[in-house]
Length: 94
Image (tube, rainbow, N blue to C red):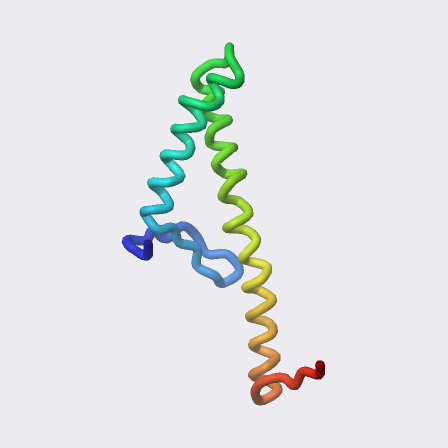
């Protein structure tokens, strides 16, 4: 991993990139769903519908990995700013 990266977009000050290995994996996943699984499970649809369902299925698999990280990064950034304003590490009581 960590090979050639492609910049996708910037959201809330965080750059979002995709590694080419993940892009290849996503393409293979969409192809596998669209040409293999969905035509076998749901017969009678058009080829276009299988590809749309395959893309939606791949997004459904990659969505949690991508979009659950942003809230955590936003909270972490706010917490780190608080730490800097307080002058260092916070004191925690157990």
